[in-house]
Amino acid sequence: MKRGKKYNASLETLDKAKLYEAAEAFAAVCNTAKAKFDETVEIHIRLGVDSRHADQQVRGAVVLPNGTGKTVRTLVFAKGDKAKAAEEAGSDYVGAEDLVQKIQQENWFDFDIVIASPDMMGVIGRLGKVLGPKGLMPNPKAGTVTPDVAKAVQEAKAGKIEYRLDKTNIIHCPIGKASFGAEKLTENFETLIAAIVKARPAALKGQYIKSCVAASTMGPGVKINYVKYGN
Image (cartoon, rainbow, N blue to C red; front, side, top):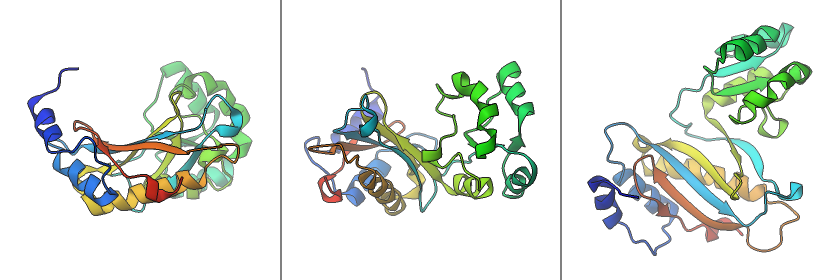
């Protein structure tokens, strides 16, 4: 893949063979974020699990101490008091069957996170084929199927992110913006990796974390020393 001059210039400032300590890595990431917009900083963690096995799945959610820098639009499926609580918590959209129809008939997706009270899952089940591929289907492990929808809305707005394996056993997560600076990004990263380490499957034998790379939207990857976080 051909890269631009800014990318190549940034790449030359990095030691490709080095595993950087987190704070140093994020300082480098911020330094190489040269775009005219505030670049998102993402973490890519390769795990030594096999996602084809149900007992080696790694999935969960965590609230980042400094948020993500992104305005999150929430959609809550709830009725009665729970719907009212979701509205009071600041959810962008709250509804039930009416929103199911809107998504089905209008192909409407002006939201980032879907939250549901448990009693609504029968209704939302009809949306599995459209929400599932987009990673939007509510899930108890991610805390998006919950009786306390108001708390889920507040956490989503505060910077709660979901982490899960892709088909190649890598977790990809945004942890903030380049404008956050190294200190806040490091705090967010350490919160995320602590949650992932805690979620290590009991069935796994051998090395858990295989590699960890941080990168801004347009910048090169910086390898992080993951060994200190437990393996």
